[in-house]
Amino acid sequence: MESIDQDSPVNDLPEHESLDRTFREPIDEVRFGQAIATLLPIELEIGSGKGLFLTNAAQSDPSRFFIGLELAAKYAREAQSKLERLKIQNAVFIASDATRVIATEVPDESLVAVHVYFPDPWWKAKHKKRRVLSDETIVHIERVLKPHGELHFWTDVLDYYEIAVPRIVELTSLSGPHYIPEPTSTHSMDYRTHFERRTRLNGLPVYRARFVRNVQ
Ligand SMILES: C[S@@+](CC[C@H](N)C(=O)[O-])C[C@H]1O[C@@H](n2cnc3c(N)ncnc32)[C@H](O)[C@@H]1O
Image (cartoon, rainbow, N blue to C red; front, side, top):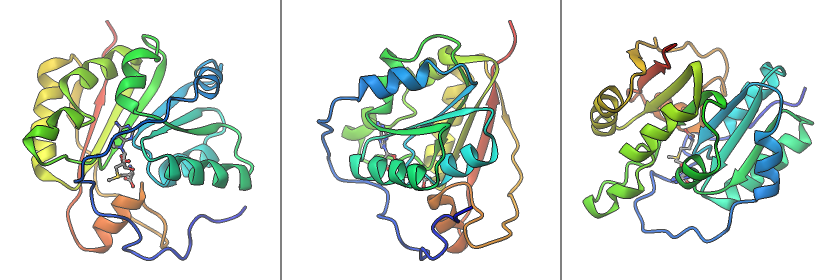
């Protein structure tokens, strides 16, 4: 099996996005419609970046289908090409604004997990509405999770963690935050995502939370 990004350096990523950016490409509705119609349990990643998490997850669990939504079309295309090179068929990367897609295209109780790893913090107050874990998106995440479905949120930005985690607790009936111990890494790419790799190799902390949708 071909390995993934064995030689990528620690700092192979741009810093967290802080510039204004407008996304103009419409979502590929056909590909998204095919993906969401799968009969396999679906996990969705918001802001999949260069795709390390989803690619590894799809390889290790063929019984599930993985959808990565990524604003940067270049990253989504490159991650999709890698899936095709590795002949991984239970995953797809789609260039889109995940906040809009989750609000308008994802049916109630359709996902077994939502993953949000190292979201851009959008520090400036005027950019607050661009934060992916906005109140509106938090409510949609609970809506689209199946009973027992999970939300995973990891970040290197303590402020973001300290704002988003209490909002999830206040706005939803998800249980959590559940504690996630720091995973051990056994090889140079054994990290959840590229941003987790960079953060930990630079000796910085990662803040992790897991929430679970309660059975009604
Ligand atoms: C800091 S990077 C983290 C990427 C990856 N999750 C990781 O941990 O390596 C944040 C990513 O979220 C993407 N992003 C920001 N807003 C988004 C949105 N509304 N919809 C989809 N992707 C978004 C950015 O383009 C960027 O690739």
